[in-house]
Length: 334
Image 1: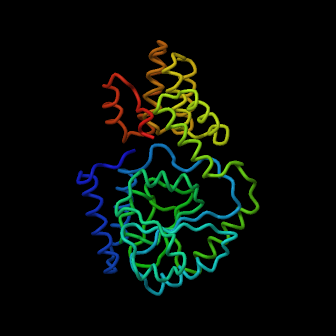
Image 2: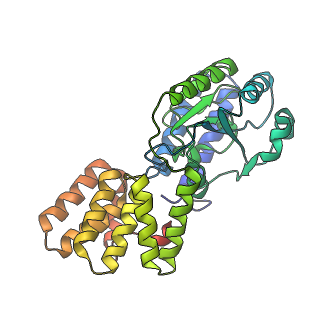
Image 3: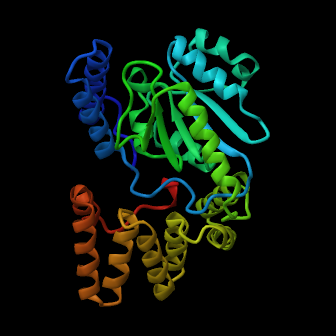
């Protein structure tokens, strides 16, 4: 889903709640965990992606891919954590360091030569940045920024296979924004080392690299936007060959078929998209339209009912979209 426009109620509420949660954690207040949970739940409700962003199958590559959201200030725990990460073998670990908001000079100094590669994200990174991170197919996103940075909406998009929070300062993110909390620098290094060992014994699920797959997908979307439907169709087919559960490729394949007048193929593609991502509202609406146009009204009603039962938060969106002549969003959303 798209991020709410700046200044909307959702953005105002979650930023206000983050400030309260951070203040409570910094003061060691007894109710600090409750505030952190409230912030996490609000972000997850307001900003969660309807379509899972990570590739369904892990892409090719033997190194453990790790995205690290850096803290906003250094301290003893931060120094130990960064030193531990930098000591890990570059032949076994592929790190991407990123700052949410301005880069902290004291933290950059700890990174040495790696500081030159640090990516600076906006203070409130939106879905476009989450998609960009997910396209790298990170195995783990390690959050050290905590409540001191506005990463909650980004974490709600879950742009990595696992999201960990590390206790390097007061104000840890908690579930459902993260999958795991890590208590110390030593525990972080141990957890990453164990993750790499498990990866080394796992079979490769997808023989294509994340960079190649992302390039094929993006080329297909651009071709679709230009009206080059054969090229788009071919690119989507290549993506689905490598990633059969990638719902957006099924959905846009269905859009191409629908535009070409192939109602049966369109319906099958939309059904595949919904099966891969039941919360994908645009795909579900397109499937409802396809069933309706084939006079299969019982199926259309069942598809709607299933969607409303599984994702009740999307009721208003379904009502709004269903009033439009066109069901479902278009290729420009990608």
